[in-house]
Length: 245
Image 1 (tube, rainbow, N blue to C red):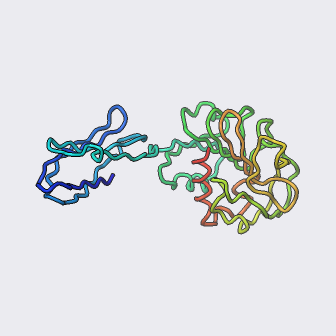
Image 2 (tube, rainbow, N blue to C red):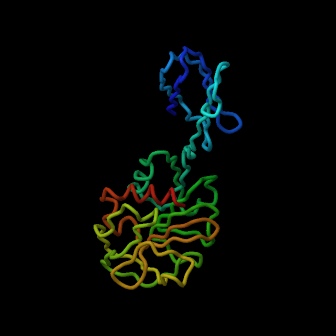
Image 3 (tube, rainbow, N blue to C red):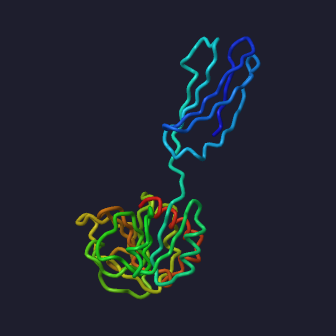
C-alpha cells in the first residue's frame, strides 16, 4: 500500500501514521516531516484479507482533523483453492496451475466427493448428478438435468456470436477458435434461467452460464476438441471463468 502524507503546516512535525483494517490488522510508523514536505510511505499489507483499509495520521498540534484520514477498498487476495476433476488432462492441469493466485488440487471423478474444501471446481468431461455447492466450470460435460439442455454433437462448428459485455467472454477473440466438434445446448435467449455467452454457426449455444446452488459455466467442448489451448486468450478465459463463478 502506498500512503502519501503532506505536512501543510508552517513548521516541522512528527506524526504517527496508522494503517488499520478489519479487527486485527494494524501497522504504525512515526514520520518526521519538514514544513510543506510530502512523504510517500509503502507498507506490506498482504496479511490483510480484504475489505476497507484505513490510513490515519495522529499529531498533537494538528489544526484540521478532517484531512487526517484516507480509505481504500482492498479486494480479497488470498489464494483461490481450485479443484480439477478429470480422468487425466496434463495440459489443462498445467494451464490452471500457472494462473496467479491459484492453489490447484486434482481428483479423479470417482474421488470428487472426498476431495475436501475448495473455492471453485473445474469439471473436465465429467459432471456430478447434483449441482455442487461451489462455483463450477464444466468443459465438455455429459448431460445433467441441472445444466443447460443439450442437443446433438456437431462436427467443425464455428463460434459466430458471443456476449462481449459479460465478464467471462469479454476480451476473448472467439472467432479464432477452431472446433473439431462441440455439443450445442438448446437454450433460447430469453426462455431459460441459463445465460447464453457464445453461439455456434448452427442453432444452439456453445458456452452458457447459470445458477443452481452456485454459479456455473458450461462449455460444450473439451480441451482436446479445439485449438483454444494454443491461443493466448485461453488463460484469460480460465481466469475470467474462475473469478466469475
